[in-house]
Length: 221
Image 1 (cartoon, rainbow, N blue to C red):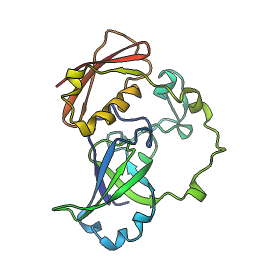
Image 2 (cartoon, one colour):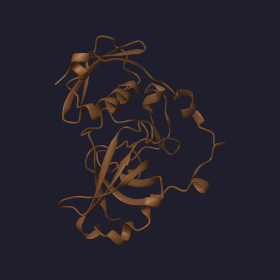
Image 3 (cartoon, rainbow, N blue to C red):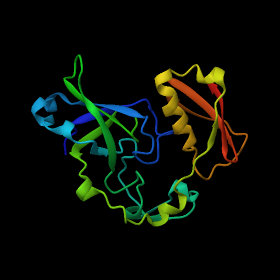
């Protein structure tokens, strides 16, 4: 298995990442290929597809040992499920799979052709092993069952974002950050309304607290 590319995003750490791909369309990433894979021929025909599958490595979760069960954060962090019934990063092989929207192929100054995508759920610098087109006829199953994950879908917070703090965020990043906060970045088992959380986004440190179903942004540095 060879790393063919790395994706560059506005999220340098695991905290704050969307829990799945395609949840926040405003979050973009730029896929930069490793020198030996910078071939225009390898991308021929890719712009005819609207979405792509990315196969990548949970580079911050590599470990020698594995457990047959994990504790999904969305279930409160206390209930165990089989690792193969989850999308936990702690797996026998730390492989991630994401469906993203293709924005386009663009030419960079020093790295050849790159692919811009949206709906990402990967931290900055994540290694990518492969890119495949999403095929609606084969990959879309509207009748599919969501298992236990269906029980915790659709959880969104109301975001209180003071105008003076919002102005510190570049305009083209404001919608993505607001949508990211609405997804509730906290671990599900933490509910202290006075606790201040923080994560990095687009070179900024975003601080917030959550009381009930409302998230309050407290500072942007």
